[in-house]
Length: 253
Ligand code: NDP
Ligand code: 8X3
Image (cartoon, helix red, strand yellow):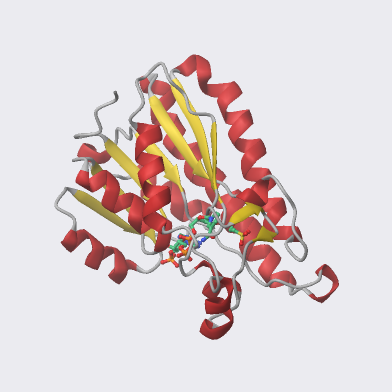
């Protein structure tokens, strides 16, 4: 087992949903956390509840300069990052491609692909130097199957899958493990963000079946991170029992 106590873990998108649950799970294993999100007050509230050392960063991962500035000026005690969890991400819209708002495309591509790359590049400088580390990307079932009206969101998660595979090929001889955890439907603020704050429409996404909870994914992330150092979980697809593939769902109502 890899002991997670006192490991330094950077989690992006820790202000809500899966990222917040991942922070709680690592904290309960005694890890020290670097938590990133734009909504700083949420990070502060979370840090108050976690019984572990935390360093909070208000950061928009789409801003390359800001990412570099923040991660290259970490307090000394947080500079050796053992585990990076690239979780921050979002979807915008669920509609035909000819009706879509290109601003949503920018949001998804800039966050899910470019933001993940900006963060990883800087964290990898230290991991490669130290010849040690673990990157865990949060992909999606949408990175394996395209579903109707999913076009650009699915494309960003296919990109995460490709980047994960490429990272593994470039990093395996640097003693850096690379994993991806690819969930199906998880009930978080994801759909509310996708529908620009339309709570009613978002609620309907999770009606009539039992969706995954953020904690289900967080427990798997911690399990992946805690495997013995010679074990690299490459990929894990996690679906609700009521979901058979991206677009096949057993809705009871
Ligand atoms: P939430 O909307 O609940 O959380 C998203 C998190 O990402 C928030 O903490 C948000 O923080 C952060 N974030 C978004 N944009 C940025 C940005 N530009 N800079 C920094 N942080 C950002 O969604 P989930 O928890 O569900 O999603 C987490 C990940 O899981 C995403 O990558 C998503 O694609 C993936 N996923 C989700 C599934 C689901 O069904 N929910 C299924 C499969 C994968 P803030 O707004 O404060 O910046
Ligand atoms: C999030 C799950 O099915 O909305 O990646 O794409 S889905």
